[in-house]
Image: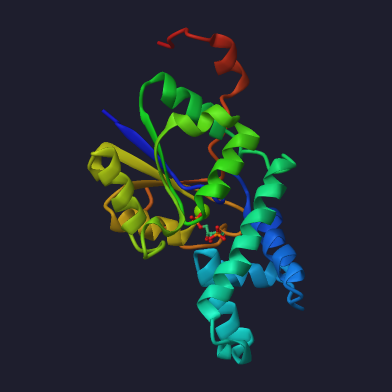
Length: 236
Ligand code: XBP
Ligand code: MG
């Protein structure tokens, strides 16, 4: 029997990148008096680097190498990223980013069936809790047996480390679980941890390579009308 479902967050639970993270990065740049703007296309390219701090560093290397001379670069990136996280939390509080179709239903059904829920994400714990609070309500944070987030492991996706960490915490092995992801980096991470992985494609990930996924879906769907009306009736 399926023991646990391991959810990615960004792009899987909600479409948080374009109008969430991207705007939060730009707001932080403004606050730091930086003349940078990550437009929709540039952000799509930068998304190949997972992790906000890692993404900022990659951007500097690729587009503003002169900035790399800063003596306290690592600390500076960390403080810029902390500011970005604050902006992301405020954006989530506005409640403008909903869960993707079928996510709430699936979570409720898994809870009813006593299948454990877990999260394996690259983003920070603050961001995960802000999203859960604004969508499913504060108590939903406790529905997840394990939340693996941010810097809890040194190597972010596509490395398998975050999935290994979550499986260890759950005291389960990969064949007892499935992962749900929206991106190629996420799929690589889950597959490298031996997890069967379902893909729900999101805004930025539509044309990525999903070889090795169990199934590739446009979203997690909603039950069709007739099924809803039939309630508990078993079909022949
Ligand atoms: C999500 C990410 C993250 C977010 C930003 O990837 O790549 O970097 O864009 O989050 P996944 P932070 O969905 O595969 O976990 O700025 O908090 O790092
Ligand atoms: Mg994702």
